[in-house]
Image 1 (cartoon, helix red, strand yellow):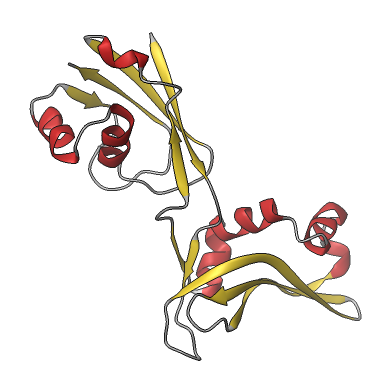
Image 2 (image 1 turned 90 degrees about the vertical axis):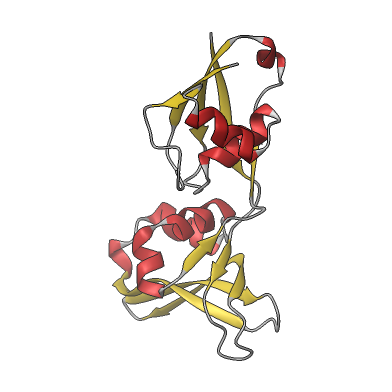
Length: 182
């Protein structure tokens, strides 16, 4: 039987960027947008607040774009400060590259395992699905989901009692499956 786990975000990740006011390197995305129109052109920024001094940083979303080229539903979401849109834009590689930012997902996600009734079986097949592109170490996920230490998970990998088609070292943000032989 295949069990399913879900990695789901619990809040917006911290934005890693240097604050020009206090030299802190962490900002909390407010989920609010600033939309500024210049005749036929529009600029849009996602606002983020420094976690130390509260200084506001503007993360560029759109810059000098013709208003008619922006989909009306996107404009509605921007004007409505849609938190889902803020999450989507923070994960957009183009937005991150343009603003020279990285994301800190520590304490911003949870693992839903739908119970631990599977842990009494000899062989467990588990599918891990990501509700958002949250980069997480598979060893940490497996340890948390199975109630093991990370060292135990590493040992199981070495003994080939924990196998997967993907590399379990490093970080993953895409769906994968693994088999655990207890």
